[in-house]
Length: 176
Image (cartoon, rainbow, N blue to C red; front, side, top):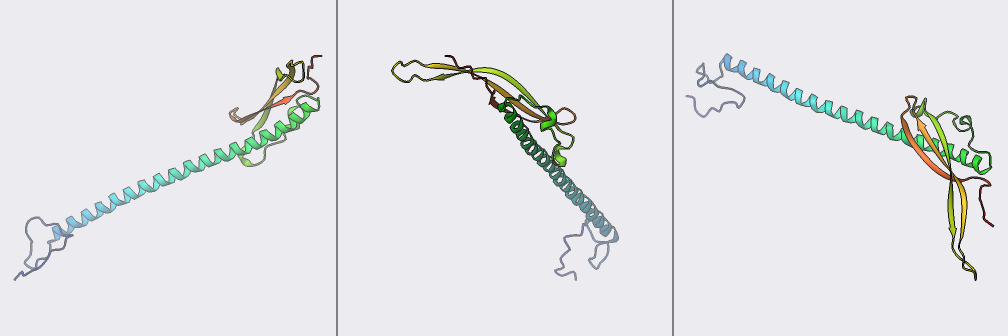
């Protein structure tokens, strides 16, 4: 009288049923519940590992974003310091003291950072092409001051370094 009974796909059988009604025995039911619990634990483990990987990715992109923001802000601050120093050099005053351009960094991304501006003087020869009937070229020496603004962290790590060549005021050495 068993007819066309179909067994549930969730029942694990051990070879024969314990009762005549076709229901799984108590032992078979317990085995299936155990497998279901193990499946849930494995699935939860896989999902938690995936969630942790996503959180780690989010944290690393946040750190990269902060570093890029910090570098962009530092470049703006360094450019402003170079503008102040270049104007001073063009006026013949030389490179100003750090207090003139190191007025404190804006934003918490640059908190505690400072700007260091260095200056190197060199002579550059500019060649003027020949003109007129004589056809002689002229060499015009000029002193150029290379200004380098570097933004550093309190630990001494360089965030950004920018350079700007500036003609030194009154230093064109024109040959007669």
